[in-house]
Image 1 (cartoon, rainbow, N blue to C red):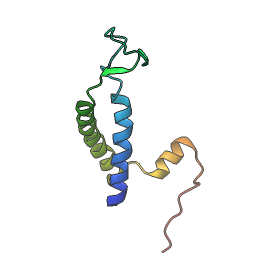
Image 2 (image 1 turned 90 degrees about the horizontal axis):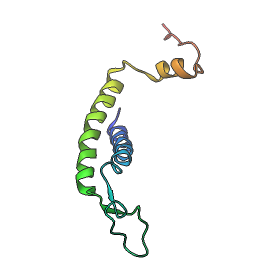
Image 3 (image 1 turned 135 degrees about the vertical axis):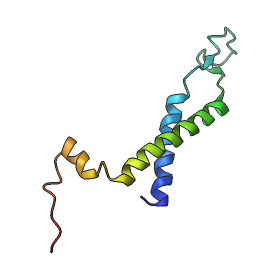
Image 4 (image 1 turned 90 degrees about the vertical axis):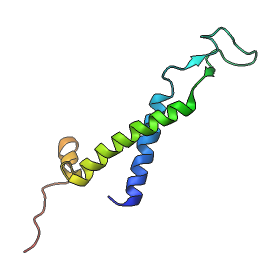
Length: 97
């Protein structure tokens, strides 16, 4: 895995984790009974976005290290995933001697 691949992997993991973390412990205007006229009751009142971004970054670093380590170790390969799910790659070719 190259540097660019590692950065892309981290970005994908970060955004997926962020989308999971955003709705946790959100307080809406409807929850607090302070709905501003012209807004939806489900609009966030206290979202704590900065704290959630830091939590997301910490989780993403841990997940990235685990996934990147698995990829670099070669314990799970694309061929393994293909055999498990699709079986489209065919038998492995041996190297010519």
